[in-house]
Amino acid sequence: MAADTTPRRARTRPLHAPPSMPWILTYHSVADPADDPYGITVSADRLDEQLTWLRRRGLTGVSVSSLLRADAAERRALVGLTFDDGYADFLHEALPVLLTHGCTATVFVLPGRPGGSNDWDPLGPRRPLLTEDGVRAVAAAGMEIGSHGLRHLDLTALSDDALRRETHGSREALERLTGTLPAGFCYPYGKADARVLAAVRDAGYAFGCALTPGPSRGPLALPRTHVSHADRGARLRAKAVRHRLRHPAAPVRGGRP
Image (cartoon, rainbow, N blue to C red):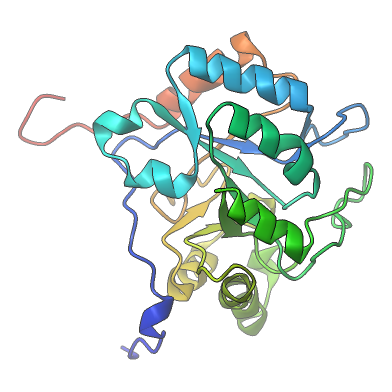
């Protein structure tokens, strides 16, 4: 077995997923949803409505690291908030709403595309991504910065060297950019296999976010719930129930279930 040559400073303290997977919501762009063939855009007003719905039910949105560090009692009052792709509109549209509600979030960015656009999407409008200054501003506002890889590539289709650049390289790039090693990784397109999970683990990430991780349940394959502009009270309630049914609490051995 090869020796672990990862520098000690690159290791992040492990975060352990609880027996019942915590509820984590997935957002993307916060802008006008009129031209949105993928259903990934939520208006700022609808985000405000959704966060209000959560708060009325005693739930506060927090970053994934905060969610996973909370004990079981604390976690009952928390829900994870994530924003994928690092759209520039997060800074001016999403962030003020989050701060108004006393929420934090994990923003998964692409350090290989600073100030670029979502040109991986063949349909729909081109939306600008955060610049390096924008990423630093998001971090300074108290949000968690995570990696979405360097350039939003299908990691399962890459060579070993390219996969290492997307996982290790993006983590190092974000440390240079923000001064902090990111704890979390988000799989582009939601795709991850055993080789990708191993690369993320080797890079030193403490958790990884997917959408439907299948049997790879655990800290490096956390399931999430997609949120769209159409989601209001009834739909959010249904999604919460579906999450509990798909990811039930494991029975406690030697005690009451």
